[in-house]
Image 1 (cartoon, rainbow, N blue to C red):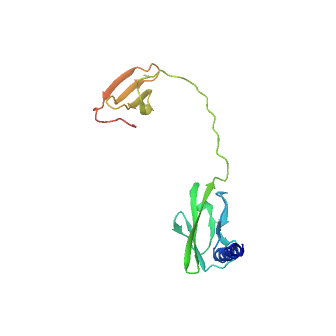
Image 2 (cartoon, rainbow, N blue to C red; image 1 turned 90 degrees about the horizontal axis):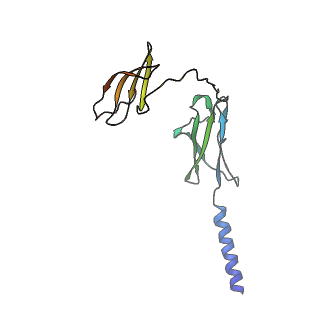
Image 3 (cartoon, rainbow, N blue to C red; image 1 turned 90 degrees about the vertical axis):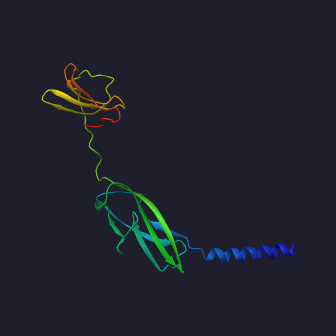
Length: 172
């Protein structure tokens, strides 16, 4: 029984010493932020252990020593912030994801259907243009692509140029 006690005591003291040398580093950044704001990056160690220095990165690009980031200088969407922390002749990379949001909600547009025109249901429209009363259309389907001049009101194809089967008429 004494052996188990001493072994347990030895094991626990070993565990305490090894855990005492472990750094618990955290990178602090917001998860989401609006484009008209700025934010600071910071690193801390949970047990208040010292570290030598930190290099900060945004999307893999090293930031200047100033860790205050003006969001308006970047595109909206997801970004990666990271910090390389140097301590006790070691280094550790910390990474967070942050989303840059618009400072106002998107404008919602409404629409009204003012007219409906007939169209060939077999024509896979890839591009079109309305010009001087006619619809000019490219249709794309491998082996069946064409360029067409169409009478808008009736859907009648006035002129059709078939495209070589090796081409796909995408866009106009």
